[in-house]
Amino acid sequence: MPNATYPHALARALTQSNSPYVIDVRRQPAFEASDGMIPESEWRDPEHLAEWITTLDAQRSIVLYCVHGMEVSQNCAALLEAVGFDATYLVGGYAAWVAGAHPTKPKP
Image (cartoon, rainbow, N blue to C red; front, side, top):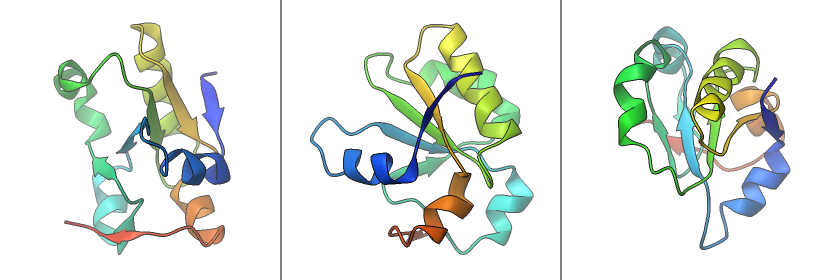
């Protein structure tokens, strides 16, 4: 199992100059059904990880989140860790972020 990041820790990290790269890996239907996303995050289709992994900065830590912080984000984080990235998944996913009253932004 990959390492985990909790919502309060991510909220704090996003205020730092060396903030992690946050990747929304909710499956496309879940992403499209949602109104928002975590500030500073970018949606990437988890089904195409092999295509976008080459665009990532290996020197920057990465936090991935899905709807509930389970299968999708954990699998993506594990794959990134396996090839040398400092990658974690967000415990509880976007649902926990929203439940914790953390800020969101509209989807692009």
